[in-house]
Amino acid sequence: MRIDVVTIFPAFFDVLEVSLLGRARASGLLDVRVHDLRDWTHDRHRTVDDTPYGGGAGMVMKPEPWGEALDAVIPADPAAERAEGETQRPTIVFPSPAGELFTQAMARDFSTRDHLVFGCGRYEGIDERVFDDAHTRGEVRLVSLGDYVLNGGEVAVMAMIEAVGRLIPGVVGNPESLIEESHEDGLLEYPSYTKPALWRGREVPPILLSGNHGAIAQWRREQQIVRTRERRPDLLAGDDA
Ligand code: 6GU
Image (cartoon, rainbow, N blue to C red; front, side):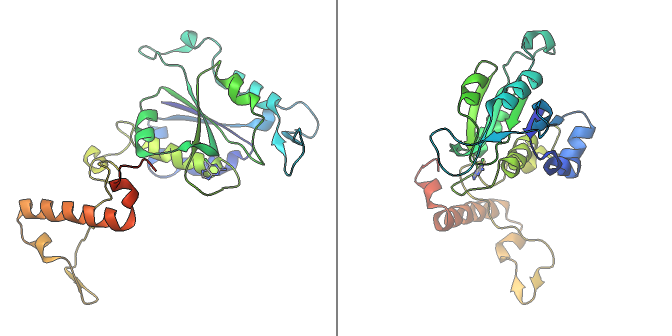
């Protein structure tokens, strides 16, 4: 999978070189390229923002650098540069607290794409015409991590790249570890324990030492339901939120 990130803070993404995703990049499973938006400015101060039409607080990111950045990062004729079997248009993701909610289902969907482009906004946002223009190049998605506000999209994009990257076959060593996990079956994960069996006076639930695999599976399922009811009743209600 190819991932392009456009940002005014490329250094934020240096951490992609470590850990699981670092290995995926080194092995060629993930081709992540980080670009500085200011490379597509043409004034001495490398200006990327300006005051909002209509007034109001804060600054808005100018459309021209974004337009040139997306022109450069997304092949104008994708067919020309497509590898064998790659037939999709790129998916262009703009992190935004005003976007649709990022979920495990969305991560799974994104993990099947050939080319993701992330455009990290800062300040009060990006000139709205950039999103309309980007539609000519690919599928545009505005995506939010949750109901709180970050200063910019960089941390959100890092979270999305990690959630998507680990679902690409070969990135996570043991694919089974992807299955029994919070959110994969709509419930939170059951509690886990390892040795010692007694620690600071606290016992591991005896059923886990029983060797009765059927009873253990049933107990874990019950724990999932109890936890989900306590912590995330919205998941049981069938809400998407
Ligand atoms: Cl994707 N961006 C920003 N700036 N703030 C957020 C967010 C995204 N998701 C939650 N808060």
